[in-house]
Image (cartoon, rainbow, N blue to C red):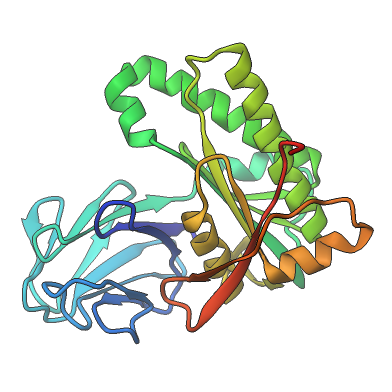
Amino acid sequence: MSFFIDIVAGPGNSVRYFLSATPTVVGRSHTCDVPIDDAYVSGRHAEFWEDDSGNCFVRDLNSSNGTSCNGQKMEASVTRTLQSGDRIDLADGKAMITVSRQDQGVASKNRFPPPEGTVTFMFTDMQGSTDLVRDLGDIKSREVFRIHEEVLTEAILRNEGYIVKEQGDGFMAAFTSSRGGILCAITVQENLMTLRDSDPDLPIHVRIGLNTGESIIENEDYFGRAVNEAARISAQAESEEILVSGVSKRMADSAGDMVFGEPRELVLKGLPGSHVVHPVIWRGE
């Protein structure tokens, strides 16, 4: 698995989903892998997947209001090959989907093999990254992204994590222990706060989500419910916040030296039921 899609369906309503050979269905129906609550989106609108050769595809599922790729209308039921950076619009922009591919340079950074068995997954997202490029311009914004990447990479490797994917504005990492993952998240937030204090013009604010579960690994990459839940928890976090699942909290808190805030009950897109998450108090409050 090397591709993922970022789906935006209204202000503040975004989710990241990692693709596999099993099609990921997007639509209005609650049975879809990624349900979108919009009357213009069909029940089963479109599907995305990748093959064993590392190719990514999309197909419109005979939707009522159509699917377009990079502004061009797609024919119903016709499979289209996608590239990193392609944009898919459902129902004339009611949902916007961006296709991204893992940076193949990630493998050279890792010092440890990918964890197997029970794994803690961490997702990070830099807030306002799109506005950064607009406000700062290409050269200055690239410098900000570079600093962000250095801080995240150093923290993950220091805490014996495995970098699975990195994009300019976000990381996916895996850890053998939930404690290691949470300590990494705390390190990230502390280091970024130090940078902001030393340079108030450095606008790097990150939200982080973690979940622990059984891993399904292929070609040094992960997929499955535990991964998707971690990504959705990250999407629900506030700027500069660390949110962890109940499983991650229980497994990390045996020493009693981590501080957590009041639990919150969330509905996570594409996952049944409600989910209790816990904010990590990392500022020494």
